Length: 163
Image (cartoon, rainbow, N blue to C red):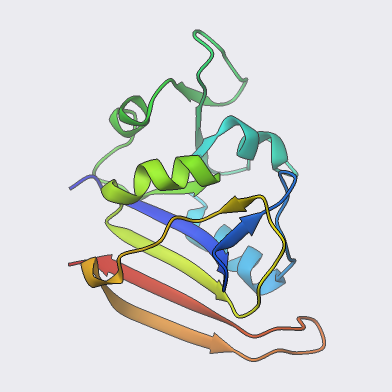
């Protein structure tokens, strides 16, 4: 068991980003992300790292995947392939893959758990999440949130575990 999890917010049309930015601002989703990932290892591609408001994110061990040999980013563990990133994770602890699109698709076959914020709207995007074969997973938790003054669409927090 690798103890790898994917954490992602996905729109109805599988959109996850545009111009290296998130497509929406859901403060409850950001709080959930922080709560789940703090104290853990997070794995991301370099573009995702560059999109973060604070680099590296505090109180997390950041593994950044790059295809530039010997590239170093201060305060981060560098990985030069998906396998290299996995080898740098502690299998005794949950590690979270946080993006972007190609990193998610490459890690999906290795993920034991999916933390999905399902956004009930479609968005114009240039990055999309891969189709998930839900027959490989059990839905173990779901919390539905209705649209509100702060958020003009409904969404659900879902947790899937690999069968």
